[in-house]
Image (cartoon, rainbow, N blue to C red; front, side, top):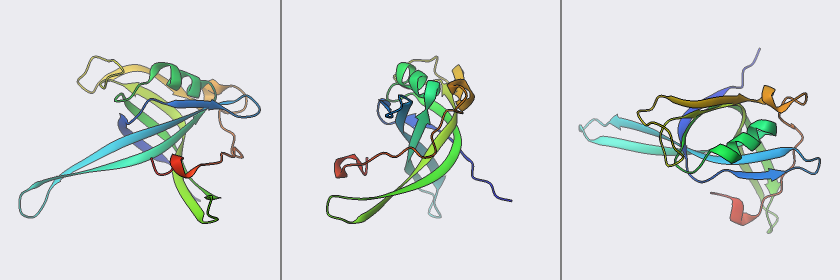
Length: 150
């Protein structure tokens, strides 16, 4: 038995980028920041930001592109996937992303909301995308060096 599940709550670092596959399926790419705060042994407050790449398919991708903006807080559930490709110099490169199965819009950020961190919007899942389940596991995207890292 195995499990591949990711759950994050964070803020968008940029507006969503929505593109379409050759077959017309919408695909949204998100950059989401999560923060960890702790006190070190000397009593100093420490903070670390982790950036996550998230890819969303189907109707959910359209809704994300339509309603989310940089700074908006979201909850994402999905699976972790690593892709590899060759850059312009022939070097093998890798990127790890979360393929979203559920995206819930939360309060806060410049995208609107009531503040306070509570629930502020709809939840979209890949079930909203229709019979394909909202994802194309064989989706192949080519990357330019300018695209990675964000």
